[in-house]
Image (cartoon, rainbow, N blue to C red; front, side, top):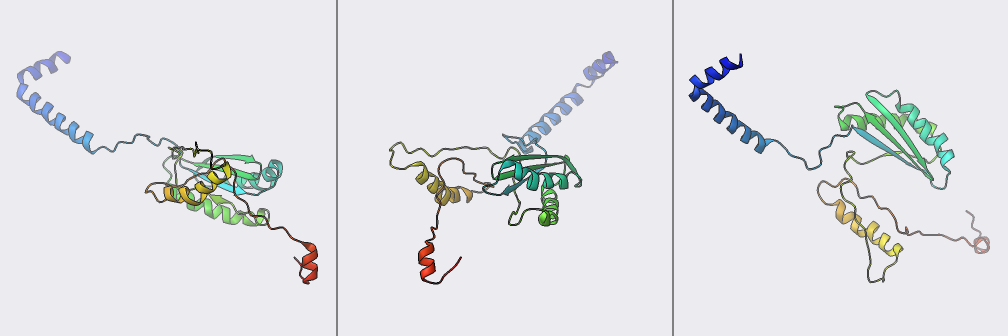
Length: 203
């Protein structure tokens, strides 16, 4: 069989040359038109559910927030895996959908299930879904360092939260800027009960 192919190719060299040139042209065209990605996204379609309940212990958050959310999504359509992580004051639930699931369909189904769960969660607790990003979306990490020593960690964090974060968010293609570290600025209101009583006010 191979000998016959070689014999036929030798007798029809013109056809072989033309076919080779056509395949070469097609290969060059395919290389130029095929989209290339430096970081190809091979991750599953996923939606991250973030719930903040400040001041509460991980055990309480696990029982009243993480477990109900995970249990509800186990029976959701096209859901493959549900993972829950609980930390002090914070709950994260990762919902992984089947391969090929549209991300916007997955996000809309997630919002529907969360709205039905609202009555089963503690009062004032509102779960939110993460940004429209993929599992390989975290592609750049930076740090603010003041070599002059004029700004402390609280001032650097304030600059990050009030200025730099919004500048970077305006860049096309950026889904979210996550701030980590430093000291967050807080505003505390101290009540003087004696003055409240003198003015006839109550809280």
